[in-house]
Length: 152
Image (tube, rainbow, N blue to C red; front, side, top):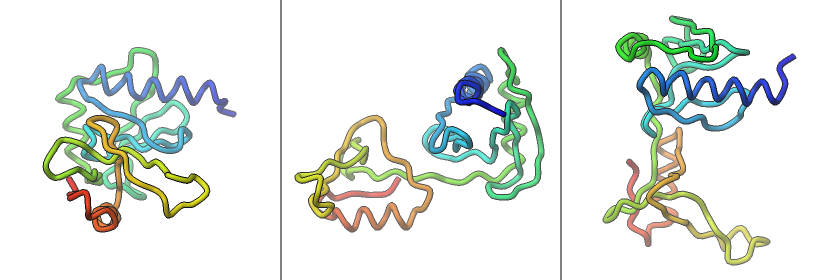
């Protein structure tokens, strides 16, 4: 059985693998099965299972096209990894941005935490919230139209 420490170590190896291979990624969501986000633009069509990094041809229920054992020091040449990634379809992710400046929706604060309708957006240059659904991101722009927001 995989322990919490194993999951932390494995996820660090995922990040290290991509970094050593020349890619900037971050893990998002459930540590047991994190989404692998490339440059805040795409959710890569791959997943981790135990200490294997499995690349698939499409985001959901895709066929396996490549597998890497995540060991200390695992890497691929950037061009090799690019070839693997080019064989797959990846999901676009979206951010909500203030149209006139480089500030992104990064979270929310509340005037009164007991009242959800007192929520207001917080913007920052870094740490943008990522959305997998463009329509949902557009709805946020509409909900907070006084801030002149756009989806990027």
